[in-house]
Length: 520
Ligand code: HEM
Image (cartoon, rainbow, N blue to C red):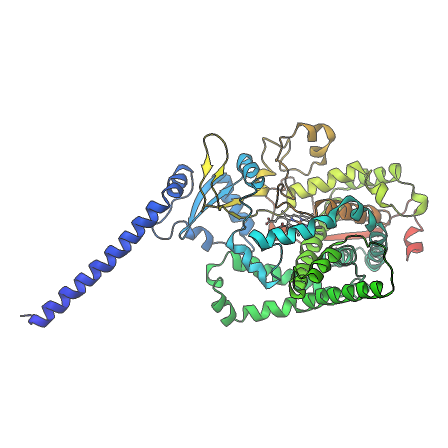
């Protein structure tokens, strides 16, 4: 027979358990009631089966940085506009143009999802900031991309492109494959350092390849972390030694950024002391240092912003340019057309294509845009802080996290004649006029669009056109007929799993054959 005290103790345990369960149930019901709009909305959109408590977290568990694109593409095929519960967080993953347009034009819903915080390992700047801090820095950044500022970059593009052409020389004619990413990236880093920060750092001449390869590795680590729940807690990340590893990878890039802030600050002082009162061109670093002088920003924040601009401006333009060289190598027909346009449009006796002429290369412009259609930033993320009205029948409630999937919109057969092919004619003037607004958004649109969009197009076209004057590109790799279903990994943008390998040969065209030699 059970003693009195045992009976009392087991009754107490049962009561305690009932209280705990009741509290949990009541908390759950209150939460559910508070979030009833979200639950109602999530129930109204299709999506994969959700398991109680875990939701669709199993969907994230199977993702790693190598299969991220495959998993997302497969999900988008099944559910072009779907709700996912990732633990307690409601997500809408969408390729719907109406949602894109409503979200991107919203002045209220500019807050990025929490996953962006993992980029703080690079630096806590404009890319990760939200609210007032973001607005403040955006005001500093915007003037750096005005037309008069962009027009002042010609000499710098020319100087660093000559170095790039010179560095390719050792690879030309060998018949061997060369992966172009690092050489192109060093060149776009040189562009950014001079045009945004006002410092000629000559990373190509100093052969600072580790700045590029380390940035590739740290970015890969951040993307892996974003999609691996186990790596997300800061403490665990540090204990596993990952935080130290990433800090080691970004150390020299941050040192370079700090050096540029110091160099430019000294340059400003020297000018002031010399009595020169001429107004300098308002490049990015000038605006940044004005804010440091006025006390609006600390010097440490200026270093963070310099790092962000360095990364945002260099890796994206390098990926796009490297893609173009690869596409031209795989598609000699397109390469021939681009080169013929250069011959017809530019006065080659100067042995260089200047910025003005670059802006007249319409077919090259179409090739760049088609490259961005296929291989742009694949998706972005926004946390709704206010209800988002999409149309008369649909409002997405505050609290939902929205992931607009750009590659899905960019391959939607409703907007593209040959969605899976590489077809520059998608951007012919006739087709551009016919296209629905918002169907092509490699730089997004609205208040949080990419401020570097015009600079990006200008620098990519300058580099590609001037390189084509000297070299022809070829490849043993066949151009995929279906780019949508090819193999990619994701590092800010889409990267070919097979790398950016091409063969390079000096171009032998009458009147041009000696150009590379003269430039060298
Ligand atoms: C082909 C080249 C480029 C592409 C495809 C591209 C694309 C994008 C996209 C999609 C975003 C939004 C990211 C998000 O919200 O998650 C963005 C933001 C940004 N981009 Fe670009 N970008 C390119 C080049 C550049 C260049 C050359 C610069 C600077 C020189 C630049 C500076 C920035 C900055 C500062 C942001 C953050 C803006 C903000 O949050 O307000 N980008 N870019």
